[in-house]
Length: 266
Image (cartoon, rainbow, N blue to C red; front, top):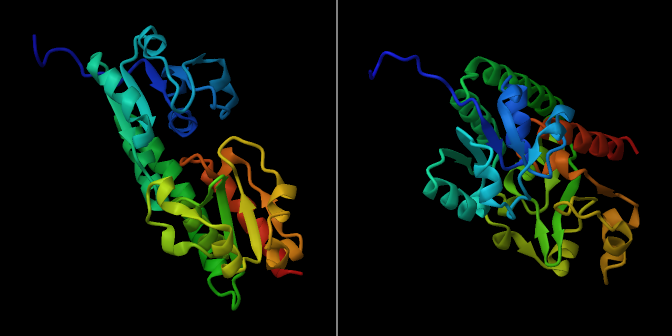
């Protein structure tokens, strides 16, 4: 009878992205995760779970075969697979974070949905503490180097909002900070001339799963005059550290800060 049985949180969870996988494990629900995307690398235990596809190339039959109680997704780019799963009667929680504060909110939301609110709050508290401490440390720097983050190379796409936030916390000045609230990648397309005009002192790149070709970046026409190219300040950042909007952003923040701090010490 209704009301007699105890309410249970999802017992079989399928994650469609690396960060939802990492969040589920970090809040203590890893034993309930039965499916993950091929991009899931963290934690190592996630690699043993069934693979259900890529970021936008999922097969719903493979997901449905796992009989999930809940599917966790991210972004409007997964709208099609989310619609198919909902149409098949599956419960789906799809977040759409773009800024750093939205990432923290998404961790709390997912943790709550999994019945792990306290653990999620602990994860977020640790991230907030690290962000706060680093921001307090870098906010007094008299000079903050100009930083260009390249998310894709053809066309050139400047960094998404949370990356711009990370650069600022880490002690840099994002040369395309005016684009940080543009949520779609197509809205952050820039030209080589745009980048050259803003003359970044540091170039960071992470090409959405494709290895960064640093030589190709430095060989672009006219870019030899860009300060970052002239001084050899072109750096690849691992995608799992900076393009996965979840707990791993803390690692990306440390890496960006390390690069900027080394630049400041020259």
